[in-house]
Image (cartoon, rainbow, N blue to C red):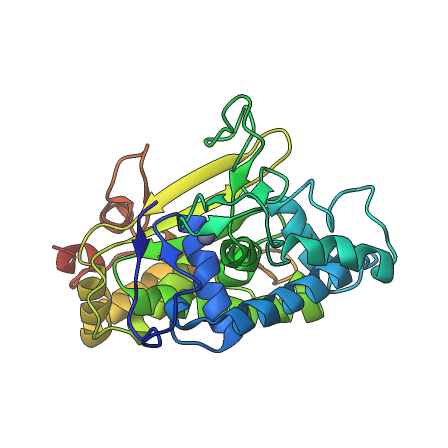
Length: 337
Ligand SMILES: [Zn+2]
């Protein structure tokens, strides 16, 4: 995998962590940077990696030993969707924190001295640990898109990338059964997406999913990040949503058309168009009999900007032009050109 060296590494200090082109590792690298309070993955130090590893270990042990009904048990569901056979998620795991902790901590331990080193599958740094599906989402299964070759014991993964691959659910948009990561051509938008999700992860661990406000989605978080960095060109954005299920892992990829920043900026600047966007959100919003949100209009409208590879493009224009609720004026489809 090619790696991207982002600015602000400390001169004279060897880089510890890279945000590579692999979408899951890349999201995890951003999450490590956010959790460590650094601006960029390249600014992360060995000490930072150790501190983040400690945080992941503590959170995993809390989640793995929680009881159903605790807020942090929802974080266990997130971990289970990504790493179903790992030490803190497996059905046979110890429910005793002191027993479980060493097994989790060992996953993020530094390589032992004198070990056989191989190039990390993500960043090519020397690595002793060999990981596979139990600890790496979407690796090593006959049904996943990535399959471990025959006779291969595992993928070499350096310590920083091991920590990144478990910081992944902090930087991703997560549900109880899936995770979504963002890749785009703006590092600031990617960082903002991870930063917002890190905050959301803390709320999930404290309150569970039921304690979160309705209406947000991976798409709305992406648009908010693009809006926050509207001075940065973000041509297009891709969302990778997956579940690393034991039996039926799946991956769905959606992407916007080009000109995403232009679309968002002009949408906000054009009052008539903004009213049209709000009308679209309102038209798509649905509540159940109890008044609870069944379909968030904001999320549903934002989702129209992202097309699946295997489906016809232009769902937003089709929805707008086919909606009888539309009452004229300039519509979103008109300005995305
Ligand atoms: Zn690595």
